[in-house]
Length: 131
Image (cartoon, rainbow, N blue to C red; front, side, top):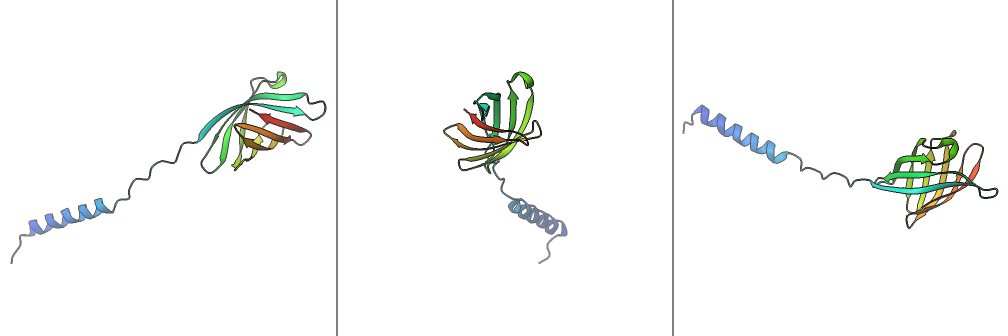
């Protein structure tokens, strides 16, 4: 049987385009968006429980527990300052790093939309709450 050359080429092109289209990966749905949360945060001096700093903590938590956000100060000496915040959430344990005053680290529990724990910097220790 003698098949015309054009017909063979056309059949091969059609078959290869079908194979390529069939082999393409199925689109992966995008990851769930990070959850955004806003809390009023206070750093209290452990001596006399005076509020050393207060402000608005806004952060997002990725599905892997990575935290990114900002802290906007309401305190007189730093009012309006926007401080970057990073950290991690593992179950109910949260660790935050505030990029202010040489760095402030927070270790707290996070339950029912509230954080409670301790904060420390190179020179100071605070109790920390956010709700």
